[in-house]
Structure formats: structure tokens, C-alpha cells
Length: 272
Image 1 (cartoon, one colour):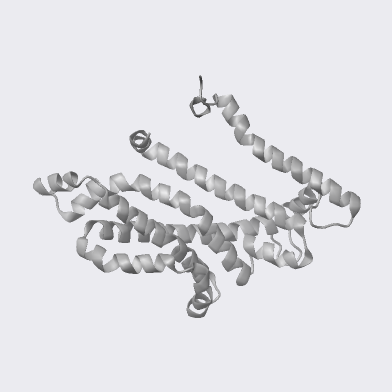
Image 2 (cartoon, rainbow, N blue to C red):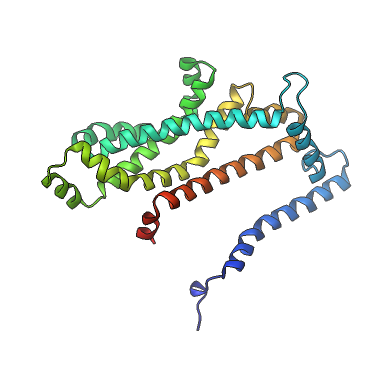
């Protein structure tokens, strides 16, 4: 008797099964919107797809009368710039600090409690402090994302370094390798795929911190626009922006996964 846990879908069925929930949700939204609009043509909670498409077309293709910019793309560029700077800073900090904590016992004893404590602080609780210290400009938003993302990546990287076969380090030292050579030739080549994996898991929280920061103190950005129009119940703006943020996050995750597979194919083989 074949058990369901042993039945694997073929590639075509796999694609259809992955697409089915999205089609179902879209159909549910269209039906719910039609019901609400039939009862109240002025309802704003669930606007029809045509209204959202019209609004998105206006924001993406028509220049704003006040700024002369296409609002949708200006918001996207501002958010991606903040997110990119924060992620780059987080990766650099994570690789540097995580490697030291994972390799140097004294550094581990000194730094692990601090990193653990920082990782347990809700980053959004620090937002007022960051605004006071760094001002309301871009730096405070970048720092918020880095505080929310970097500690997790540091702890993950340090833990994975500790789990490396210690025999590798012993052999390298026996052959006369210095600490720097061990880091560059042994540790980092094995840990970079793990850094990319940790970054993939951090994309969602990074977007969360970005949207929160933009909602409180910004003059552009995807989060800023969502919270600006909420007072008008402009769901024809909010819903497309939420979908767009989701697509951007998915594209970032896909790009990182593709980068890892292209640069480190051996990592997928070793974990499969």
C-alpha cells in the first residue's frame, strides 16, 4: 500500500499545486469584492481589481504635479536604497563579528552575552532612541534594520563556525597556517553559503523594520505611502503596494537562492 508521505508530485503538478492557493485567494477576493460592492457601491474596503489597476497605472506612469516624479517608482527606489544599505551593513557586520565569535574563545566569552541580549531587544522599541540620536534622516532607518537583522546573522554564523569539524583547523595549524589564513581559506569559503541562507531568512524582518521606520518618519518610500493614504481608506493604493512589497521580497529571496546555487553548488549537494 502506497503511503501519502511517499507520493511525490511530478514537476507539472508541483507548479500547479504551488499556484493553486494564489488563484484561490484571488478568486475569493474578487467574489468578496463583488458582494460588498453590490450591497454598497461606495464601499472602499475591497475595491475591484479594475480600480486598483487604474490607481496603480496613475501612480506608476503619471508624474506627480508637486514633485514631478512618478510616485510609485520613486517610493520603490527610496525603500530599496534604504534596504540595500542596511543589508550590506548587516552582512559586513555579521561576517566580521560572527567569524571572531565563532573562532576565538575569548571573544566568544566576551561577546556572546552582549549579542544575545541585543538580539532579544525588540528593534521597534529602539526607534524613538534612534530618531533622537541619528535624527529623522536615512541613517536612523538603516541602523534600525541593521539592529534587527545583524544580531541574528551573527549568532547563526558563529554557531555554524563552532560546528565545523575541528580537525580542519588542527590540520591547517599543523601545516603552519596563520589565523588570517584559516579565516580566508577555510572558514569563509564554507560559511559564505550559510551567510546567504541567513540573509534569506532575514528579508522578511528587514522589510518589517523598513516599513515601520518609513511609516513614522519619512517623506517617501513604500511604507510612507501606505500609512499616508490609510487615513483616506485608500485600499486601491494600499493593496497594490502590499502586493508589490511581497513581490520585491520574493524576488530578493529568489535572487539570493540563485546566487548561492551559482557560486556554491557544492553547498546544495552537501545538504541534500
